[in-house]
Amino acid sequence: MSEQIRIEKDTIGEIEVPAKALWGAQTQRSIKNFSISQDRMPLDLIYALAKIKQVAAIVNARQKIINDQQRDLIINAVSEIVEGKHDNQFPLKVWQTGSGTQTNMNLNEVISNLASEATNQPLGSYQPLHPNDHVNRSQSTNDTFPSAIQIAVAEGITKRLLPEVGRLIKAFDKKSNNWNQIIKIGRTHLQDAVPLTLGQEVSAWRDQLKSAYTRLEISLAELYQLPLGGTAVGTGINAPSGFGEQTADELARLTNMPFRSAPNKFAIMASHDGLVNVMSQLRLLAITLLKIVNDIRLLSCGPRAGLAELILPANEPGSSIMPGKVNPTQCEAMAMVCSQVIGLDVAVGLAGSGGHLQMNAYKPLIGFNVIHSLELLHDACRSCRIAMVDGIEPNREKIKTDLNQSLMLATALTPKIGYEKASEIAKLAHKEGISLKEAANKLNYLSEHEFNKLIRPEKMV
Image 1: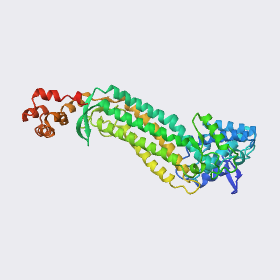
Image 2: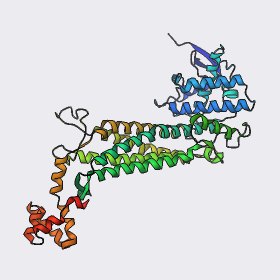
Image 3: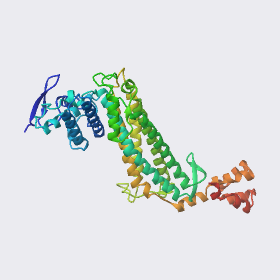
Image 4: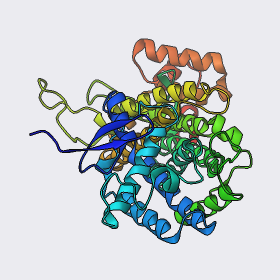
């Protein structure tokens, strides 16, 4: 049976819309014209845009541009939307107009029809709220859509990603403290080097993440400046005086975040350098995480033919053919996530540089990639921490064996006998498969007492 439809019209003409849909003509045209991939506009962006509609209604009612009933209908509709009650009414794909106009209108139409339902008016009647004249009053997609991206990204990073990165930092800090007395051999160029403690090695991962956390936190400052009130090109046409400042103040109260009106709305609407900068910090976080999990992969490789200094939790079988094999799967998942984020950053950089004159026409791509990246990193950090980092254990026996047979302990001899003689000892020990002590004794460079006094790994860290 064919789906029931209703006929709506816009400035292009008439179009068939599913009878029960809360969206309208402009949304339906976008569904028809942009059937590209399955990438839908992120709901976090929709919710952020809905919050803009709420504060715009408050300010418009204050300015007597809409009446109190219209304001309350918009606020009630927004409340239902941000609670997730109408998620299926936002079907539009990311790959649409570069301004995000169709998504803005999708939201305007849904709010309008929710108001119609609430007042027993037919869907599509746009009574008592018109999508453009009331819901979109004093706004343009060109200022609301980038503002929504900034709000969604700032909230996502502040309330989700940074807290999860903080938990991962604490997990590494705990391991670093617990393992600070375990002396192991260091490695540079993937070759044996002088000793350090396992705790010192892990402290590097912890503090790399701390730096990434701080850089990301600092980058948010640009996102708090919103272009609301700039309307079409930044001049504020059709918006009342002070609209940008008042809506930013209302958003700050609503979100409990320091949003404010941008002093130059032309700059933020014509380009999105702040978002590009945040994306670059997400890339740097991905680079940090990729380095860490690659280190963990190396240190845990084995269990018998590799370094095998770390023992990872055995979460699942690692092979369909090799019995008993266990793989570093959390490292691999994180590595793929990080590689994806690095690639998404390239696209955001290109998009940020692609604006023309008064508007950047890559807004949906920028919003989608940044929001998707922070979601990927949040989930990967959580999974990595819970399923791997918390359960990592040191292989103390293997660590001790590798330390005791390392040739690079000879570095501690150089202040006493010089670089060349210490090198001779190391080379002889390696060539004949004997210990450093035996080589030193054979060359008669040091007494056993002198050797034992100098080669003390606990003093070398």
